[in-house]
Image (cartoon, rainbow, N blue to C red; front, side, top):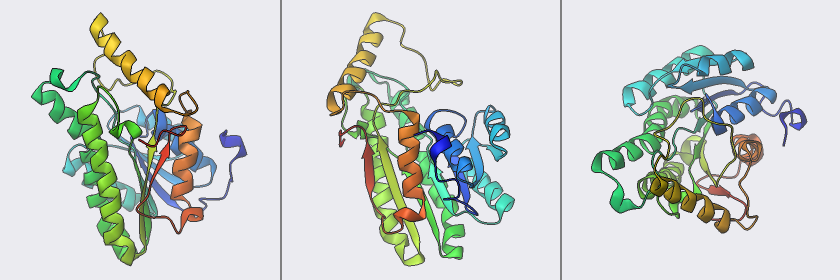
Length: 260
């Protein structure tokens, strides 16, 4: 769905933080939220997030969310800027390497977990005192159907952790009027990344391992295709909106029928 056809007032007055917002799904979500009248804070460790924020007339925060200090500073800056946080979209993460598990070095396993689990853990922890104090708020985590997939075991473990955070934190925080939900995207077509997650596949073997991921992803989808950035953003923004007020603790697959 194009942002030209969205409900232009669905997020009027809402203060929203989107992490990993410099490109990809995060930027698509930020664009849709801005088009729907949200006041958006874009967080990313890449400096290019400033250009994205300028495009959307939004506020940018540069921070490394793999460290608690970075997450705490980013959430504090967002809260100071708008005075409250109504929605937090945790989008940071993504596969760095693509290969069978026996080929991962220990430091690579650590890096995958650090990239795709800890930013969600840290930002949830940093935001919770603010949300509890205001007795309201919504957290939308971005997981993945790749919790069942080939050549990405550390990434799958990290996203499985995101699912567990979503379910457990929803149970803890419902008493405060807080909802915690997640989407689980499947393969998603996107422009070439402006800042790479990791090294590109170089050897014939590395390219074959990556091809196995693509084939398994499309094969697991009933629609036999990748999704679009707009399709992912639409699901995230629905869960973030008041239209989903009776939904919490849920992980919504957005993968053409692949349930992960």
